[in-house]
Length: 484
Image 1 (cartoon, one colour):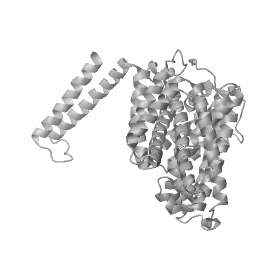
Image 2: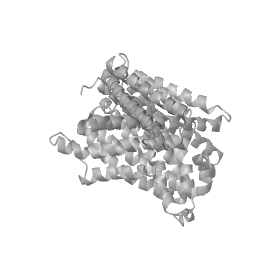
Image 3: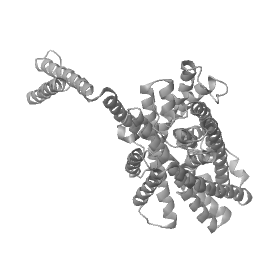
């Protein structure tokens, strides 16, 4: 599997900042309020549980990324471990997840802008910010990393200030007299809603081919990103529920700004609204990088049009893959539905994660002598628990996200067969299916016409003739496909 050359320009700091920035975005500033409304004060437990489930996946990703430091993330790992078709499914769904997450971030940014510019058109703002980061990402990973370092450092400072101020001013220990004010089940179902918050470490694996000293820096950056993100999420959630009652958080479109108003006054609301802008920008930047690299890797291996794996001669970036991903992100963001975008992105990540977690076991058996700078502890229980946890969280995802995920799967299967079988073979295959379908329709119609089998519903003669005509037409079209 040949690797088209992308420059290794990111060090430990740059990779870690991309991981943290990928996590500290829409999940932190957009989802916490709704999550508090769903689980009550038990939302803190939901974040801890979500981190626990994600920990297994983070460890498994670390082993695979250190062993196979090639651009493409989970898709590349499954390609090495299991084979082509499972790899394609992984890459297709992870690409899907990142694009929906980018759309969620773009929409979250637009809503944050409304705090400063009331009445601004959110759709236009979302489109403009996606296009801005498309241009930044085309210019190069080094430039992207520099911007990410600045944005993430400023964000972490603001969040630390938020947490310290919250504990000093306004924190109410009695807010946690009951951890289950809405019952136990909402705590579990909220886990799937916020699971996307912990996916920042996965972004690091998608840019493995652009990290210096990958055998060391990939694992270290993933561990650092996951640990820091988890600590920030849990502390921010604890302070938020401890300062403002959970039902008020659930009703707020800017929950952290509401908390900051209580602890730091009007200046606090402004600071946290600015922090929300920074956070969402870091996530959008990191996820745009990841989405483009997944599309690049799929194209590199023949699953998508070859143009997507073209690397810019000057900037050494997959610019066509970046443009295509950005266009799709804009289309998804146009839906304007925060919860839908969140659940859809989670669905994509979880399908990919289940396959990636299991690929650790498969790769250990298939390539036992592969150099592994890092090995997951408690093997094989860690990859099995990672697979199981992904499936458990997947089972609680909203039904609308599952529906859109299935549609995406159908589109993916068509793409797979077009590019793997080739046009001629695919045409013959569809021609054969069309002929068979036409024969079945025609035969069934004739049998019902002559009363050999009873019709399921009353059928008039003109309707039977119409159905028979469709069947005969399908046979003719199928034969033309086979013989042309």
